[in-house]
Structure formats: structure tokens, C-alpha cells
Length: 120
Image (cartoon, rainbow, N blue to C red; front, side, top):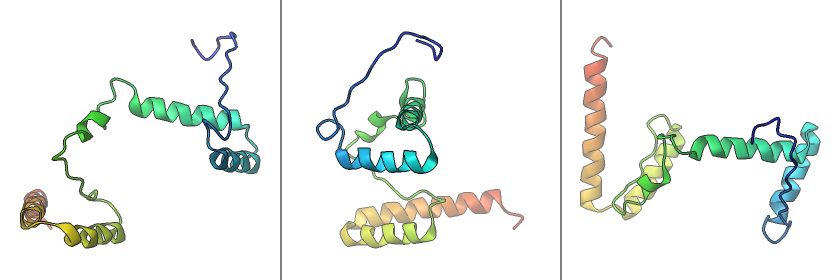
């Protein structure tokens, strides 16, 4: 179906059972404030979701996080306070192996930085 298809299809999602009422209410408030139909917001959100999750988008597929050994680290460009908060939580449960691993990763980043920006 393309965007100019005149065939009408209806999607009913009962508010309060399948679609949480608090989310519906918040979306309605935002829609009124922005002067947009709620339908337009939901279509926009759906389009964003499709772009991020459709087949062929290799950026972040959910199956890459199914590895039980996967460890999440803060993004390099994350705000300083977020990285600091992550380290605080990390040290609460980190094993010596975890600490060694993160130290090694940081050293690798430091070496890469020095290599690429020798002129600084």
C-alpha cells in the first residue's frame, strides 16, 4: 500500500487495555498543544519505528543484544555526568576481570586517539 492508496483500513486499539490510558492522555495533550491530530503523531512514531527496525537497517539489530556476554558501556560522546554515573554503578558490582577489561578498552581508545591526533 502506498501513501496515496484510498482504501481505508481501520486499526482499533482499546485505550486502557491494549494501549495504556496514561500514554493516550499524554499524547492527546501534546497533540492539542502542537495543533496536530493524534493520528499524525502516531503515524510519525510508526514511521520512525519502521525506519529503525526494518530489515536492511544494520545499525542496531536486536539480536546482537541476545549474547549473554554482551556488556554495555556508555557511548564515548555521552555527557560527562552520564559517564560518571555509569562508572559509579559499574564499580558497585564490577569484578577484577571487569575492571581490567574496561581499563584495557580505555587504554586502546587513548592509544588510538594519540595515533590519530599526533599533531595536538
